[in-house]
Image (cartoon, rainbow, N blue to C red; front, top):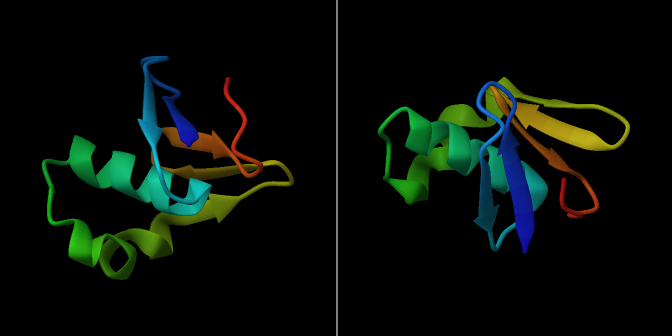
Length: 68
């Protein structure tokens, strides 16, 4: 289980995938894109990584999967 937080709204979402895939999914779904098969192909270029976090747009998750 991976917790993703929207840094703009402070709302959290939960995903059962890697933190990178989770922030991509959260971002894509915020854009109205529900075609999960193409998420990585379409949005992976937006992902940035820090020492402990991964981010895509306003969405962030800890790399080790722990909650906020």
